[in-house]
Image 1 (cartoon, chains in turn yellow, blue):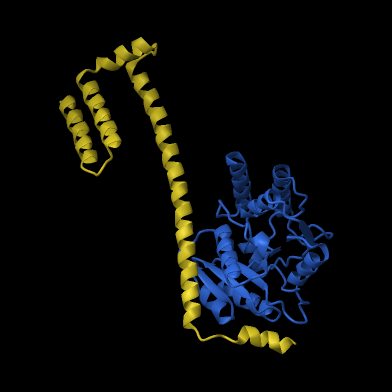
Image 2 (tube, helix red, strand yellow):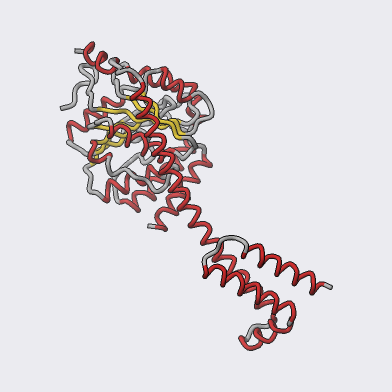
Length: 122
Length: 233
């Protein structure tokens, strides 16, 4: 029962990801992960076997280690992408602000107050 | 080349004021500046109140960020604007009334005396300003750290009042849009070998500016940003 549910979820996730426009590499990675998920659900002892070969205690421990490392990679990747995006946003906001300021200045009549103030002080 | 403040105003001198939600006092600040200097640009950093309108009404040029980017980004925008309008000297100035308008003249004098590329205002050059103790302690910690990092002998690292020649202003591009831009200015000064000097300024800690100014939490944030900036260098 739980097997069918998990399989349905994993395959559903795979289909959802694949339905977006992905590069070849991304598609391959996503489908490989799903295939692994399916394999682990059908053959639960697979993790134990791999863990034993690698010298790790239990299969679930192995899965946990991979999950933690994978999570940290994902977090770092997202963090740096966000920072890059913030920089880009700042540049765009600045460009827009300066463009509008120049446009507003062009619309206003030539303002003499600056020069008038200077002339007054002489 | 530049003129006495109380004589003929220097048309090449632009004052850049980054402002975020400062509608209450900004009008007065600009009015006091415009009595001496016609060239004032306010960067409205995504304010929710009437900061931009007040600045415009007081006679300043206004450049508006659609969203809040932080004081560093606002300064960079203001400097870019001033330079595009032909500024020969750029003075950064706080929007909340902490700085008196005639402080600019003190910095301009120092610049003429020393021929520096950039002059930093400092609260700590003269004796016993009215700086609250907790804030002074945290600022001195940031100062010690920045001195270690940048090697510059600067006594007041987080003073919004600075005067720089256009050549120096052209270098002012900040990676960190927030408050750590103050340290970035020092790092850029060192990096490009700019000649620098300090001039004394007094700061009026009005109740308004104390409430608005850097809380201890902000100061801790600055330290964190400094560490991060040093780490990623």
